[in-house]
Image (cartoon, rainbow, N blue to C red; front, side, top):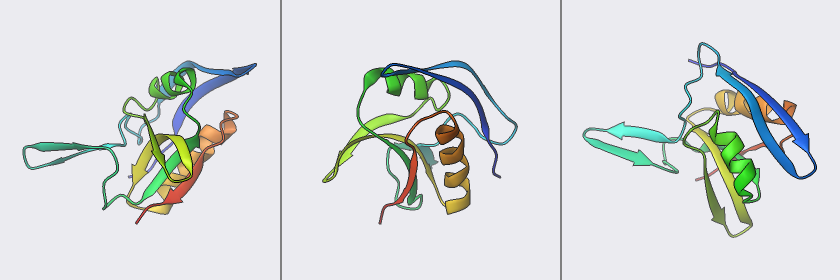
Length: 114
């Protein structure tokens, strides 16, 4: 099931904040948790290799993203720190979230993690 999140983002200087965040019918607000039996796995999950990231580690940007993607978190790899907005099992679903975040002036991108 795919969908789009309804976000209202405004940029003021270096701060971004979510003014009104109402998910549409198909996107849940959590993209980074999977229940496997009695265990809830949080973070990067191998069967969800398409990840929407926003470069940087600014707390204000993270808090703004978390108003819509409640389980977004800061992570890092060899290229630097980034906000992990969502993980998906297919490119099309990840691209939808990227488009929504980019339309709000955030430098979101879909990356493929092996």
